[in-house]
Amino acid sequence: MPSSRTGRPPVQRAARRPVAAATPRENPVRTAVTRARRAWDRPLTAYYLILGGSLLITVLGLVMVYSASQITALQMSLPGSYFFRKQLLAAGIGAVLLFAASRMPVKLHRALAYPILAGAVFLMALVQVPGIGVAVNGNQNWIALGGSFQLQPSEFGKLALVLWGADLLARKQDRRLLAQWKHMLVPLVPAAFMLLGLIMLGGDMGTAIILTAILFGLLWLAGAPTRLFAGVLAVAALLGALLIGTSENRMARLACLGATEPQTGPVDCWQAVHGIYALASGGIFGSGLGAGVEKWGQLPEAHTDFIFAVTGEELGLAGTLSVLALFAALGYAGIRVAGRTEDPFVRYAAGGVTTWITAQAVINMGAVLGLLPIAGVPLPLFSYGGSALLPTMFAIGLLIAFAREDPAARMALAMRQPRFGKKRVRGSKGPRRWNTMRRRAPGVRSSGER
Image (cartoon, rainbow, N blue to C red; front, side):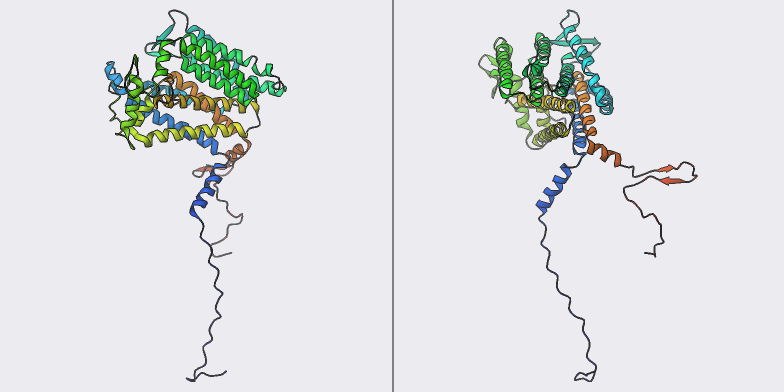
């Protein structure tokens, strides 16, 4: 071995390893977008959006009902939590209806279509009987149940039209009859006009607009031709213009669009203008929960039709955008359920419920913002009113049941296993753990073996 100059053997150095090429850094924005797309494409996305979105809207609505109704209750010599307790009771009953509807099979939903329609028609006709029907704010659409409890049957008419119309169109599609315009319109349109007539006898045009939107949604999903759809829309617009033109109250509401002063000529736009005042004074984050001032007698119907204005005043732009985002997520999930199913009844019913909730939310928020006339319809799942909350929560249960019926979602739900707890095996004395998502090798080895 050759020696170095110092007489010591040369040191053998290890060969240098090739330097690996530096991997390019991933774009965090692109990574986030990819993960978001994967999350949206999961089978249970619609299920969780419907369940979580409706729950958040209902809970936030209970909080805002308590905040917006205290002054009104005290002015009526009632306890401050009077309206909140009634809304909480309705939410509890609605939760039972939601759970029952979410667990019902589709066949049972279809079987309930005709009984619900018959019951809704009977109650809506009973409203016009003297001594039974009750007029509220000039509209006779209520039935007194005793004490302070009242029922508005027209709210159940929306659910009846969705279920019955979906079952009717699904049966006609199975028989391949929807290609003929007569079968597409009859008897769906005459039955819808019968419900609209019963509602307009009481003067509630806001609910009639929602029912018309449901009818158009069902016709659109059924594949109505453009000419037929435009014809029905023209007839509805003509009737609406006639009903608005013959009513001074409705013309006054139409004249308040874009009003910035309470008194614009002969028309008093007090409610519309103070709704804008409430939104404008809220700022970005609001004045604080319970600290709004417009509900102190300035803003009529603060806990019902104009609860969105109180939300804007107390929670600010952040609160109103949060409510808007929750309704947008709920609408997206409903459209997704209707678009991914192969069952025609599920498609029509999910589309009808989605049209109902989104159209009513848009009309309510548009009226508060001054973009649409005040129609007197509540914000779904949010405003005070048990008659509106109960059928809406049942309809949400329908969407949850339809989301669970998707084959991919059903498989994903079946694969879920509890993560915690213990369970005793049959025939064995010792407990064993629940199966978890982590699977172990069949042979258990010591920590030192490989």
